[in-house]
Every structure is written in C-alpha cells, then in structure tokens.
Length: 385
Picture 1 (cartoon, rainbow, N blue to C red):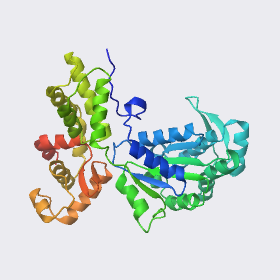
Picture 2: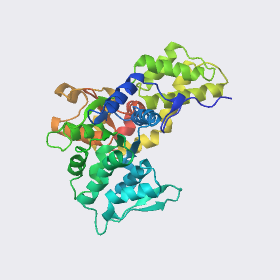
Picture 3: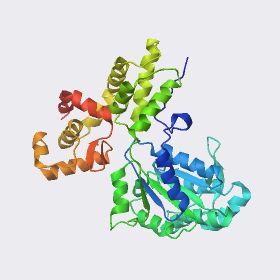
Picture 4: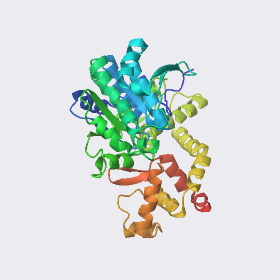
C-alpha cells in the first residue's frame, strides 16, 4: 500500500517539491550576489515559502547563517521584537556568550532567556511603559551587529508576509523605521515576500512609501507547464500508477497550474485510483476529484461569498466566468457590473480579501475551484445578497 505521493497545505520539501530550477537559481543568485535586498512577488499558492525555505537550506549548507520570519505570526509589535530577537539570538549561538553579546546591543531592553511551553528557548525583553521607535530600531539593528561582530559572516533574513508590518502598530511609522535601519546594514541581505502581492507592490513601487525601489525584484511565475506535467507523471509513477499525457494535462489545466492546487487535485485523484484498486488514472478519476474538491469546500466558498457586498459578488462572479485585464464598458455591461468607480472599489476590496489575484495584467479568481463553484452555483451566489 503506497502513501499519497502529493502534499499540500504546508511547507513542501524534498521529493514533494517542484524542482523549479530556474526560479531557485534566480533567487539564490540575487541573494548570494549581495548587491541589493530582494522583494519577491507571486500570487497566493505559488509555492513562495517552500522555494524560500529551499534557498535558505542551501545557504545553511554553505555555512551562511539565515533567519526566516513570518510576520503573520506576530500579534503585536512587542511580540515581533521578542520573536525576532530570539531568532537572531539563535543565530548568535545561544548560550551565555551569545546572550552577553545581544545584551550589549539592546541593554536598555534587559534581555533575559526564557523557555516556552514547547521547550523553545526565547528572549524576553522589557519595554517599560511602551515600545518606542528607538527600541524597535535597536532590535532591527541586532541583525547587522550579530553578522559583523558575533558570527563574522553575512546574514540572510527573509521576512514573509512583509506587507503586514503596518498592522503591528497604528501609532508608529513602521515602514519608515524599518527602512531607515535596513538601508544602513552592510552585512545583512533581506528578502521580502508576502501573499498579498498588490499590497507588497505598492510598498516597493509607490514613490511616497519608504521602501520605494529599495530592493531588486524577483517575480515568481507559474511553473513551466512541461515541468508540472513531468512532476505529476513522476509522482504517480513513484507509486506505480500510470497517467497518460492527456490526463496529466487535464490535471494541470483544472488546477490552473498553481502548485498548491495542482498538488491538492492530484492528491484527490490518487485517492480515487487507490479506492478503485487500479494502477492507472482514468478521466472519471479526475472528474470525481474535481467534483469532490468543489463539494467539500462549498460551505467555505459560500461563506466567503456571503461576506461580500453585492457589487463585490458581481465582480468575483464576472471574473470567475471571464478573467480580464480591462474592465471596459463592454465588459461591465456584459456582466451587469455598473459604473467604473464602483467596480474598481469592489475590485480593491476582493483583492485585499485574497479572493482575486492579478497575474501580469489579468485579474482572475485566485482559487480555480472557487471559480468553478461560482460558475456552477450562480443561484447560491445571488441568493446571499
């Protein structure tokens, strides 16, 4: 009995990971070259985190210290500072010598070592009455000090969901504080990425924002179709299951060649084949897997749609049926969308909600199976108005 050869919903490594050789080489080369920081753009579910972790693994194997930090896991600025300082403390080697070094750099925060419920060693910081820009700057500068004075090597720091820094404090100009610190660091290379691509692009592309043009750009596209086909075929073959080219192309097409959804659909197809006791994939297996995937998520999809305004629901329904680059008058009339200002206001909202993505110039529903649900259940979509 073979275990399912496809993985999704968590970081993917090893044999379960798309090789994505070109994307890997490009990102590694940008960071290893050290000429600038890097911002990586890609819609949700394209495998950004798995790719970044693989690149950081390469740096670790080469003896280059690195830190990966997901800002979504910080619920306050104080929490971020503790967790980030703890990650840098680990890079410094932990122990009394590392604590002494860290303590010299952020002495007024009185760092002490604590042990979490899971046994993880962390730093505790004392902010007094309130976190200040000075305290934050000292924590952010810790990476440069550790790289230059403690480990004596360049350091790579990856900030995932970087667009979330503004959420950590409403009364401090965090983008400005982050930028003023990071721009002076000579021994740290930063990588910024996030799942809300449009927000990240504004951070680094708006002249009025502190991070404007402060990092080299890496765009992570969908994998080449041939690579996806080879991956699907290879993973099924690892369980002695055959899949012909037509069916492999169908799996890639139904998942819109988005890595997460390709793995998810392939996993359900494998379950169908295993249940039938066969060693090859049939068209009926793919039909059943697609139907089951949409049905299993129907309640979740309906709930997401029900939270949208009528104008927003019309926009997502239109894009489910017809992805588009330009919401011109003909398109708006075809889908009964109303005026241009109303449409673009609704579009911004559904992009912020992570429902709509923009790849190149084209707007579309980020989840291909949500798009299928919207196309197949028009009565349910309109019923939640």
